[in-house]
Image (tube, rainbow, N blue to C red; front, top):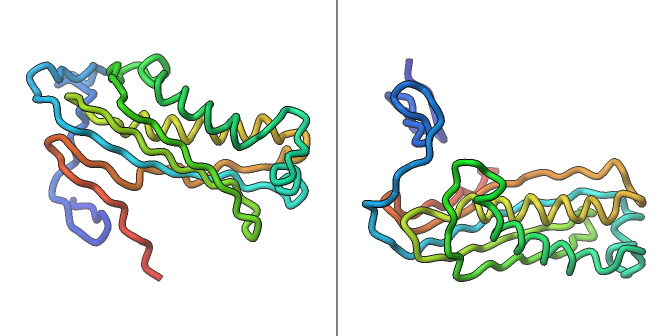
Length: 174
């Protein structure tokens, strides 16, 4: 039976590249692929109480500058992705940017990472790991003020390079 994905009909199940013909996990052999410019952008957010947000914005956190530490943690995470996700390739990252801003109205810390390299495989996981670890760092640094914080919305929003080409998340219809 066909399944619907974003309004388009698919006639077959997607192929999982990290599973061999017998269903076993495997690392993809990218040796024959030509290197290309790769770029990926991911985003996510930490939802917190108004009191925790005030502490973040005022710099009153006893552990230090929450946003600066989270930004550095995200950059470090992107560089360590292959050590954390078993089937990821070690990639020579050319650039990692982690932008973090507060949204006082929504009481969120919003995180966006951009990762760039010249390689045989993409940097989507590096961008996602940067957001995940930056968000976990915000949680760690603010948990004394709000243990009910939520990390949410972590997703790939764009990627370019390689055989599959461009991907851009579509804006929600509303």
